[in-house]
Image 1 (spheres, rainbow, N blue to C red):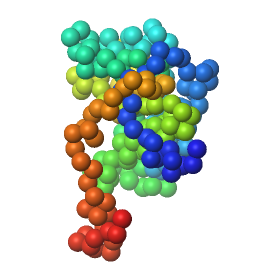
Image 2: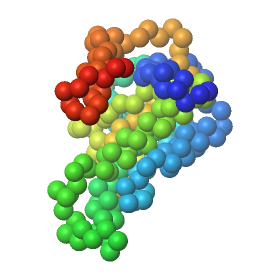
Image 3: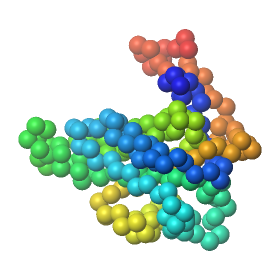
Amino acid sequence: MEFSEAVRRRRMVRRYLDRPLPAGVADELAWITLRAPSAGFTQAVSSLLLESAEDRDAFWAAAWPGDETARSSGLRTAPLLILTWTSEAAYLDRYAEPDKGWTDRDPARWSAPYWWVDAGMAAMLTLLDAVDRGLGACFFGLPAERIELVRAAFGVPPDQLSVGVTAVGYPDPAERPSGSPTRRNRRPASSLIHVGRWDSQSSL
């Protein structure tokens, strides 16, 4: 579909049909993240694909065990989970190289932590690619207190920082809209887009 149509259709899907993805789609969805911008071409945003039932069950057991299952019940129906990770150390190392010259590796030099910025852009590509394929997706974060358990369950190295998880699958047509957009009005573009000066009014 046209890019603008994919952007308009994108939403967070929280319940999926019991239907596996075609072979190879998981790899293709992960590959698209490699085309995201990468500061200094650091290339330190990584994906962990969990597609088998065993792997997905192990993830949910580590991330939302016991009485917390209700919070994630709809997402558990997704046939694919893509865990996004990034490495602050890799970016600091890259920008201490001769062509960048920040030899002290001080994170305070960064106006924004691009290890997070690049990872967010990579995740957005997956969300849009899923829509383009007629799929649904939802990006969500791990509970901070469960990250180490998820890391241990899948052998993720300690330098990898958890960015979040993208659930992917065929949307359940019976799903009703939920989440914050159903409780909050969309702010007018004029309050968020400024032209020339901050106190200007956009015509959008």
